[in-house]
Image 1 (cartoon, rainbow, N blue to C red):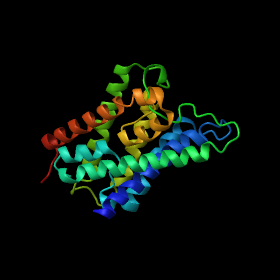
Image 2 (cartoon, rainbow, N blue to C red):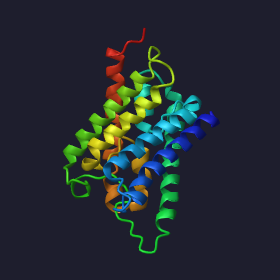
Image 3 (tube, rainbow, N blue to C red):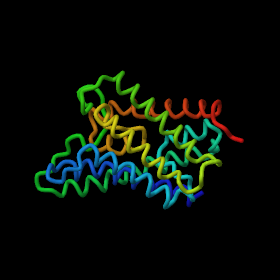
Length: 228
């Protein structure tokens, strides 16, 4: 179990450091020019690379909502859930801490949003709480549904990380303007702890919505998924 939890810690660390790091360190400079597209691909690439690196050890969840959704779908034992979630959250917090240490090394550093998730005035596009809630539920639903389908036994082995990574890229392309894209409570928690204030006050949505979306996907998969 220690190896599995370590793999989840490292995988979530890489997701948050690579994805949020691209937003905080690279996208902040116009001359770099990665923009929304670059940040979206950064998140997708973190999942793709770590799924290949440690997916064979832990299953490559890197996300409490994914663990919950897989549990609901009957693909993950409930007794391992708490350990996975704790490891994922700790990995996200550690990544946010390292990212903060690097970012604050710049002379004119200002924390700003620090890639935190938000709604209302803290939504990149000024979207409402309702819009953010619907977005996070729907995006996480499809993310988990794609994970379940891509890892199905009848799908050619070895290609699942590509589909999952591209799915996360697409999710970010659509939803960054709405919530700065969470679909992952651990990712949201790490950044919110450093921003504090409004980010912590709004963090509840980025736990509730992704978990609800993933749980619904698990239920739907049990109905429509082909397990033969």
